[in-house]
Image (cartoon, rainbow, N blue to C red; front, side, top):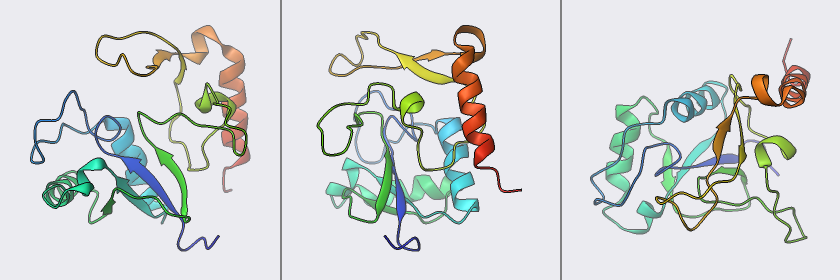
Length: 167
């Protein structure tokens, strides 16, 4: 894989922007602060980021996304609805990570399969499952603060982050 061509995909609705239901191509929710911060940091580090959204499947869907990205300081990122062999990771609220070549889901990817893209100020871990009236079709994560409930996770994450520091 050519590192110059590799890219990180970020979903828009429900991942980078708040989303409850589709209200038309011109309506995009407010940014989710931690994801906005994370994407800005990736861009600052020189990583290539693309917005992967179903909105790009319609001709009227791309321009409002590009305007939203500029409004919130993300510049002119590519907006697409397709992945390719250069995509190294996808951040999406609806995806379930599957272990390659097995079909087996990785239930808690933020703990068992730490992302390849750099994490930023990682202070919470999303672990538990719950039913929600708003999202009955898939498992929704709830916040679990590792410092309070699972100190071993906090130590593991700090060790992982420390091993990737560039000093």
